[in-house]
Amino acid sequence: MTVKMIKDEDGNYVPEECCSFSRNFETGNIEIDHVDLPCGADCDDQCQNCVIQRIMNEYTEQEKELKKYREIGTIEECQAAMEKFIEEAQLHEALRVLDERM
Image 1 (cartoon, rainbow, N blue to C red):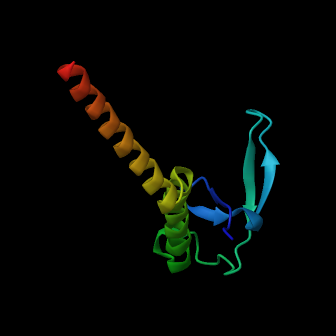
Image 2 (tube, rainbow, N blue to C red; image 1 turned 60 degrees about the vertical axis):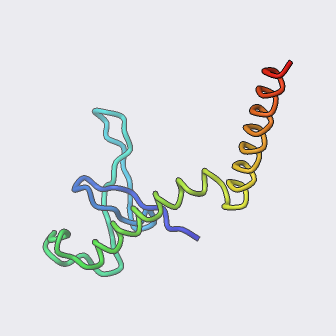
């Protein structure tokens, strides 16, 4: 199970479940209104020095990378696709050679 993370206005990622949202009436966009982290976030907004924040940011980056691989497919699916590609390339080459001989 993954935790859905949202980027805040400072560029840090926070769990969506720790956020409350409001609509900006000027732009119409939904924005983070308040973040209530389990750690209390009483570090005077020194998020760049916070170990927990760095872990949340790294977690989000890792999840983005994993999502790319999940979209590609499993190793078995990639291997099957590669084998099919090789078979088609060999067949194409065999047909080319046959065509040259005729």
